[in-house]
Amino acid sequence: MTRTVIQGGLVVTAAEELRADVLIENEQVVALAATGSSVADGWSADRAIDATGMYVIPGGVDAHTHMELPFGGTAASDTFETGTRAAAWGGTTTIVDFAVQSVGAGLRAGLDAWHAKAEARCSIDYAFHMIMSDVNESTLKEMDLLVEEGITSFKLFMAYPGVFYSDDGRILRAMQRSADNGGLIMMHAENGIAIDVLVEQALAAGRTDPRYHGEVRRELLEAEATHRAIKLAQVAGSPLYVVHVSAASAVAELSAARREGLPVFGETCPQYLFLSTDNLAEPDFEGAKYVCSTPLRPREHQAALWRGLRTNDLQVVSTDHCPFCFVGQKELGRGDFSKIPNGLPGVENRMDLLHQAVVDGHLTRRRWIEIACAAPARMFGLYPRKGTIAPGADADIVVYDPTARQTISAATHHMNVDYSAYEGREITGKVRTVLSRGTVVLDGDAWLGRAGHGRFQPRATCQYLS
Image (cartoon, rainbow, N blue to C red; front, side):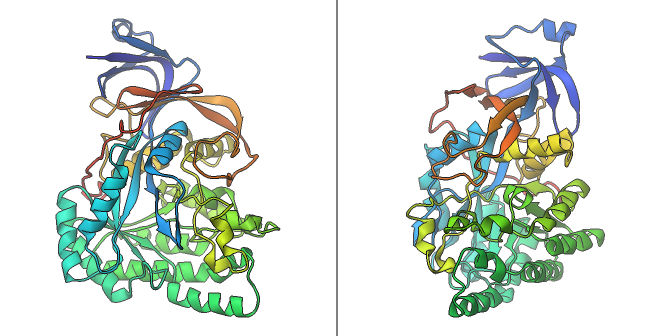
């Protein structure tokens, strides 16, 4: 048995802050005791980690990543190996990625393909959601089987006709099924049919630059789809989780539904909190770096997103990490913004950017941990194994230096992509040490982890509904 003690830090969870030592045996937390107490002083351990002056926080849970995702004739540039390593560098110790069902194939085939991509390659623990591209009698039955084996969430798209799109009838049927089997429907809420018309019109008028990606994917079409998804879920009697909420009017739809007592949840991402259409409008095709869907919005939307995070109308901050290199991938859309692969890198930056939000006064420390660790773990059936520091929890722990200064840059990040969406941004706070299930995978500037350490995590159903 290996015993590790983390001494002298400020333990911050979603529920409390306390100066405590943390005792770990093998892969789990077994005890916390006040620093300097007779209990803590009596602990013996094989390894002691000094956390004086540091925060001791749960490892982050990023519930929305896309490693190796095929998209637009190319594929996301991070593999499960590079992407999970980068996540750990940024203080994230669990990801929930998306397995993809191909149209005409079953859910099982898609899930098996993603298991094959990830197995023995991840440095941190991982789980899967299931993207449903083809809702039919067979795949509806498969949903029940997947829930039983720990794939308890299913993503549907109101966008991308001809690729992932589902019409309202298919969405309703999937929601009805999840109402019975306990699964959670995740929704990409944009009116893709209308957006395609606007794309066609913009290109015909010669509006081909990246900034038009944001202009055609109108805020009102996100709000309309969010409203429609909420009403369909209400008809089906199912819960709903709306992914990557970017617009103030979409937040308002979620807020109204939650005031009615509906089981409706929302996620936003760092790019919507820190970036804007100003980035999409950068000259010389630089704006292509910032093309993602839902798109970046004008800066004034950020206040509504921060407010939603404080009022709990938005519960989770995930990254929607889906990186494409500027050279050779984003460049596929030169002369036609609709051909720019949609996605941004960010799995390494989330915890740090949200700590900067604490420094800036947008969030409290405990709310930081809630939206980045505890809430995603609860939302997707991983809590309290993940997302907190408590006896019985996995020892996924980050020792975090709240005063260290760093500058985000592609020159120093570990994601397999040739640019940073936050290039040159100076922030306060930095990961110092990362433990994954009790194993130190990162210490200072030394990477100690390995591909294959990460384990697949079957999940329970959404814990906000039990």
